[in-house]
Length: 288
Ligand SMILES: [Fe+2]
Image (cartoon, rainbow, N blue to C red; front, side, top):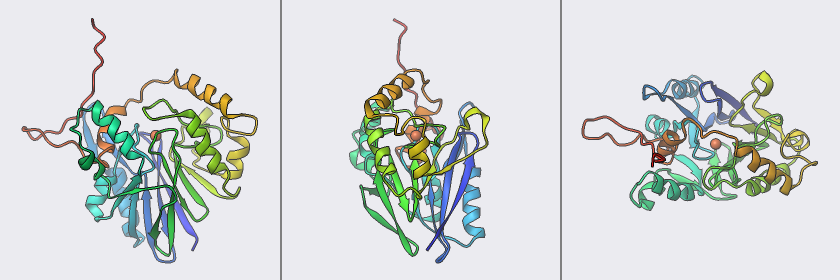
């Protein structure tokens, strides 16, 4: 089978979500879908995810899995919304447990291991495969940007989440809890060992220097021309560069809303007694 990859660009967050289609059997998976969220008004909606559902319907595709490459810190995942609409299972890498343990403390969730760990239907481990149409997809654990970062290999395509950007975008920050530039280097090195023709599909493109949107490169191109990880660079140099750069970056605007929701596979916080749902922002009190 040769799968067909369809990228859906979410403009508000610069995210590319994918619907991968097995044309032979008309099966599909969704990777990294997004809920629309307006921070100022608190409005959450699903226009973007609904477009993807319409695509599945119009093309008579059977959805097999709803996948996330990690708990994103810059957008709300539509995984649970899609699960509710389709009854299809959600999947993320097993490293999510580490992220959940950390942020459960930040948000003062009860020690929930059981509750939180069950937010996703499947936690995939390194090398584990899932049936997908007439083929399969394989999880490849690629920590570094976050401890739960997981890439998905389908035939000669690899969906890397934020483990790599396009060659001119370099790599993602590693300063979130559990992030580690050395681990990211190792994960990217593993991806770069795949055959040169393998297609890399990234989760974000911020269009450096105002160039047109691009979200697919190849292992060969990434290996030779990624501005952060390439043959001119060694691990120590990369770690120093990444860490220096990360110190200059602001906290993402949607960090707390995203993690609160994404740790729960995109389930919104329970309504309070007045029927309203709320997002918590932990405060650091520097007034004294
Ligand atoms: Fe990310």
